[in-house]
Image 1 (cartoon, rainbow, N blue to C red):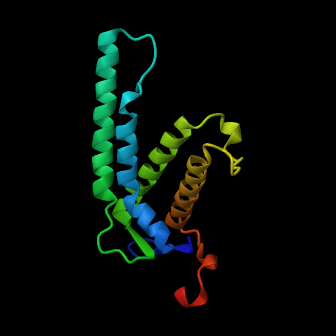
Image 2: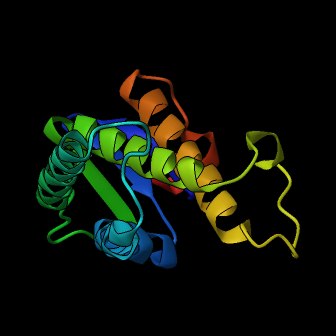
Image 3: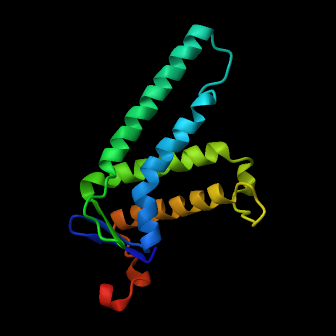
Length: 159
């Protein structure tokens, strides 16, 4: 990310082209990951069989509804290749989505104490780096939304 700033009607995030492609595809990546994990139990515990099945169906329904809403709210029509504009009325959706993805990643990672250890041989390296990246973007959006000026990372001709 090159920089982030508050505009009159939202937040602009200056990105590298690869970051923009990644963020545009993130809702679809999350959907495919959720579909792949449908075989894993959503809920574990000493629930009666009928309650367990009902609870799992309800969780899946909520997941599907939230993901459909995110795919709609996070769509990026006619965006430049390097500047993501998040309108004010979609900032909450972006923050919620980033948080949900972070929680999904965190639930799949072992020992939270090791999340900062991202060695080349770590089998969870990709998920840990993604968790850090999404956390940083979420923090930057929160800072910009609160009016904290983060333009020091922008070049003079962009400010």
